[in-house]
Length: 225
Length: 301
Image 1: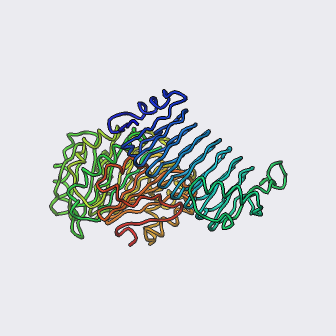
Image 2: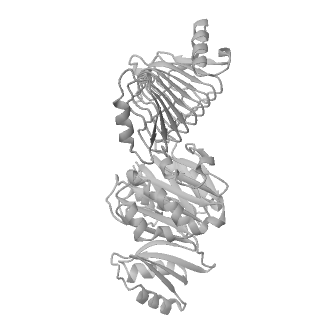
Image 3: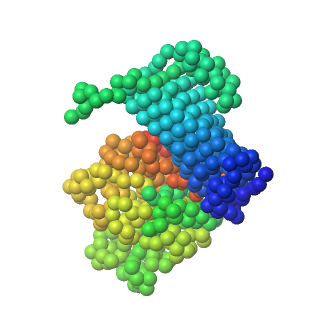
């Protein structure tokens, strides 16, 4: 159990110490006074538990692998962007582009996420216990996104194969995003995701959205000349 | 990039600390804007019929007292002057347009930073930290303040291109982002009689808001018109005599975060700027929604 106080140490010091951890490090690290600083706890590549006490800035826990990062506060733009595996848990709200391009692992946001949550998602799972802003899951390619609240405008615009589950209202769907049937396999999948994120809810209260697959090939009628 | 900061005090007891609360907020945005910085502070209001001018000259030795003696003769009124580095605040009983006209004709080297009953704008090229100490921001008092740190993208790094931009009596504008239709809009506004000092896009937005207010729109209406007529990426903060307004474009690529307690409302591009405010741990924190006009204080009136 170690503590890094960012009032005394730089983010570079913290991140270097995290990068220097051995592959079998089952360490617990607490980070104090993040005060909105950017790139806190980026590039972790070891099974370590990091708890950040306070609000962070941009790209918190970016490029994350293996370990678990808990942020006891709000996060700025691009939390867990390009995450590969492991878990990132935000106890407050997230700003824009939460989980952008993430390939694997689980991102849980207890509050709301603003615009473009899960943009270009490439395989990670995201569970937002609140609502998400406009253009969430824009061009999202793979993975699952669970939204327990509402979704803003143009949800899933130009998406590929990501599966989106929404409990609340969807303000509007983006191009090529449609509502789909909740089959048994989706109930099972969603149940497991809710359990992993500690959400007690019935998956049958959710609707599923996905790609109509009409934009995969060039269709001249779609071109605006 | 660019950084925006604003602080509006709900608790008048904090007014003596406005500058010292705000200075670290501005300096925290240095990373977003190291080229130039500025702020518009509101307070020390002059009575109705009087105006307060903040003037600036490239020479720190500019003879402000002879200028004020001249103004006293012309307008047959007393003029109070307080010098602050290369700027000076003049208070007098006179008509805004007349004084602007006189200065334009006789003192073309003097920059008019702001005119109003409450507003004072100070800005300069350089690091925010330097500008904070140059004008002794930490010692300043007032009810609210709006500031900006600039990383120039659209035009040259000059004092004329730095923010806040004055947009009429007691109004100012700070902007993070870029407008894509500013050239055409500038031509339209020129045809309506507006004059421009720079090729800067924010100056066009400032003139646009001045025009909408001149034709009788409220600030809230003018900002809703701006949503239709200004094309680009932007977060705007507009300072008014008794409050401020915030607007983000419908795509909302440019950041903004807000904090509110019983004592104050604050806006900043990033949370870093807010983290040193007293009581921030208990503050309500949120991001303003895209394409929604937010107003505090008397900004709606």
